[in-house]
Length: 339
Image (cartoon, rainbow, N blue to C red; front, side, top):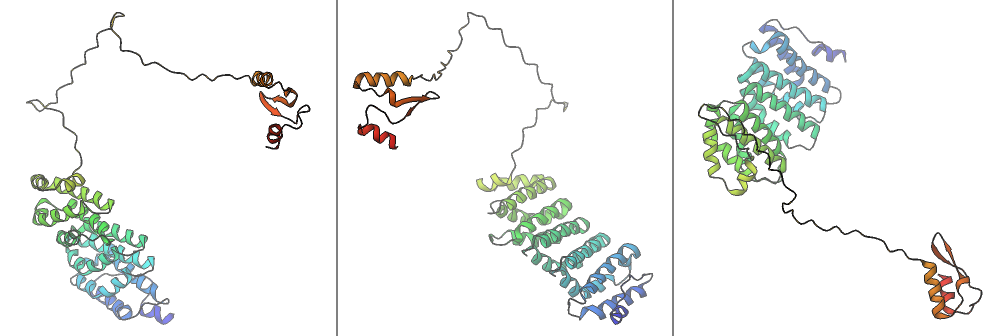
């Protein structure tokens, strides 16, 4: 353990010159670049990436000549951590890329071209925690570095119908961010790519992809309103229904550009008692019919000339049958008693 700390110190080293930067980057490459990650040394990979992010923030190492070349040489290390099953390592890797994009700005595009294939593969993984963290981190990278040349690459995937591709949802999310943060001139270069992707996204089987297609179109319409209007004229009915949000009608304006005040509504004339009223709908109410069970039993007794009153009693208004004393051999009464 002491030998390992001697090769790569656990504490962050201060970087005050390009010579310091070259020395520390050389130490990282020598220690970790050709070393297989194991249970014993994975924390060194994590520490190395955290050090680079700290040096960018505190010591501005991104301003030294050759810094991007150092990052290119560390591609394998960053990819290993970004695709690791350890959430700590994957989080540190995407945080490092986000920090680099924040300090490098549009110069990050070189690193983006190097890392984008790996990032797209991460979008298709099954771990939601890993994927969501990478998507949110890459959207921050887009905000910092714009990355307009990524638009046609994302659109080429979204323009093809692939129902079983889980990356489509996250690529559509990033495409909406790309359209939103880039300028009109940059968007105009890729209008055909965007429009072809929108046509397919609008009828995607995934509801969330269709929702993001609508968001992409709204951002596209804000950047290029005339082009968006021409684009809608060529859409089929189903695509237009899913792509265009129903808009509210704007109130009319006068020649001065001022909205006219609404006219007060006139009160309705009072109705007289002699005026014809609309026929009222009759209301039918259900009235339950009361039945006197004792009278019904007495009526049955009178018709049959059988004294069965002694066999009938009442509990809470309901007849209760007990074994009669007078008619012992009546088959019907015996059957009723058994039930």
